[in-house]
Amino acid sequence: MEIQLSKRLSEVGRFVPKGAILLDVGSDHAYLPLALLEQGHIERAIAGEVVEGPYQSAVKNVASSPLSDKIEVRLANGLAAFEPSDQVSAITICGMGGRLIAEILEVGKDKLTTVERLILQPNNREDDLRCWLQDNGFGIVSETILAENNKYYEIIVAEQGHVRLSSHELRFGPYLLKDKSAVFRTKWQREWDKLAFALSSVPEGKSAEREVLMTKMEAIKEVISDVS
Ligand code: SAM
Image (cartoon, rainbow, N blue to C red; front, side):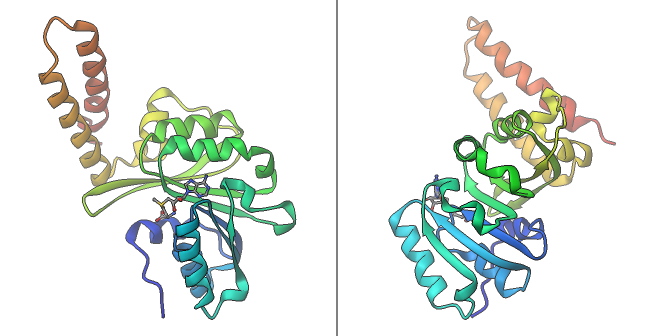
């Protein structure tokens, strides 16, 4: 049975290099590595999962796949799912908060020196994740943003390297900021609307609180209102 990936995971898959040995961290059903194996896109995979229930779902799906000899499911916390002898060349970490992804990378960072590419899909706090990458010798080489089921998802692709990002780039994404796609503009307009709503309920007397919200709103307006 061919696996139908969500638009979000299909987009993530596009950034996995062809022929990669992939570790998918937090691989609850092992859908992403199984689909990439089916497509002949990757050579081998490890599906890592820390929680027993999702781990068992992944084990079950892998066991019923004709490609089960090319993928191992491991019950492990973050990057503890692989050893240097696995020769992992690419890592995907998707569907978690940006801070949790950064924490997973931080805990296992000594193992990342031989990994060529990270493909990360944080559900929030993308700025914290970009900060971690910048502070730990990873440069962002590509980004995309998509909407699915009324949610916005950013995908951040990083490789070994040093690129200094401005505070604007850390917040909005260096490539996303250059593209300013329609999806990007809609996401940030929605954020602006939320902040405006929050501001409307802060009393005039609480000027420090109002200032914080207004500064955030101004930065967003500056970015989305310059039609280039
Ligand atoms: N990656 C899939 C996706 O994007 O559709 C599943 C996302 S699901 C919301 C997050 C999964 O990550 C859960 O199954 C959770 O148990 C797992 N997870 C959370 N922290 C983890 C960690 N430190 N190591 C491995 N798996 C983790």
